[in-house]
Amino acid sequence: MKHAERCVAVPLTGKPNPEITVPHEHSLGEFPPATALERHAMKNPLQSLIYPYSKSEFFAHYEDNAPLVIHDLGESIRELTALPFLESLETLLAFWPNKVDAYLPGIADEDNSIAITTAEAPTHFENGRGLLFNDINTLSPVLKKWLEALTYELGLSSLTYARNLVYATPAGKGTAPHFDQNINFVLQMHGTKKWWVAPNQHVEGPMSRHTIGLPIDPELGSYTEGAMPEQFPENAAEFVLQPGSLLFVPRGAWHKTEALTDALSLNFTLSAPTWIDLVTAALRGRLAQSSEWRETANFVTDTERVHEAVEKLDALLSDLAQDIPNWNAADILGATEAGQLPFE
Ligand SMILES: [Fe+2]
Image (tube, rainbow, N blue to C red):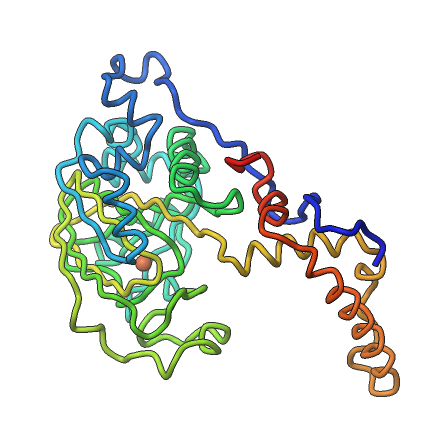
């Protein structure tokens, strides 16, 4: 293999390392001058979302995969509740230039939805269809900085895919029972919504989502023990979210919802890499330094010449096996978290 002896921090080919910026100041003219609590919130989005819980109390829930609900958040999240486009579904539709996902009849799930225009959205909503606005942070510098700071405050990888989703749910409707591979913070903006959250005893650390009644992702199916359930687990905790309520939904937890009134909620959704993701990202960056590994994988399905492919790949794997003992965590994290490591 044509590379150095040790695994070094090489440029990765994946998502570029985002520059973490910590929010520091309101732009003048948008809001009145920030209070001390608001200034604190801008630097500590996690602390603001879980106020008055401490971070250690939150991480006890986080590490235990246990949900956490907080009600009556006020001043600490004022920068979010003051966002003009989140004032109502109408202002959101007027603001949003992209398509919206509308749930279809049947299983209320994003995998059973269609993309519609904002002009079509009110009719769908009036007909009882939930609406989903994806990646709304792409048009909001305020949300973008909250997401970046939240990712950083949680100590998640620079490769985390963080985004904001907004759900508009008509009264009596909700989402079908499912779990996600994401870490979720749900901030109720308007209306009242009921949540049921249950521990996932069917699979630990799911890397993709699953909705009861829909086909299972093949990779997910490869590591689940037994079949997925046909009914929502009975040992669910119930939470009623009002405006100003925050629900932390652990990665992988079963959940379903029902809006008790027309409701609007803002999600902070964090798809954080697993150890698999970090090692494969570093591995790819490492192997990319080798012209032999970069060769096209020729003849792998050619019955006449597949033996050449096998010989070639065995030689590469043998080379890699000799390299792996030189790998260590600090080097891998140095590659994936370039510039963000506390011990650098
Ligand atoms: Fe979900």
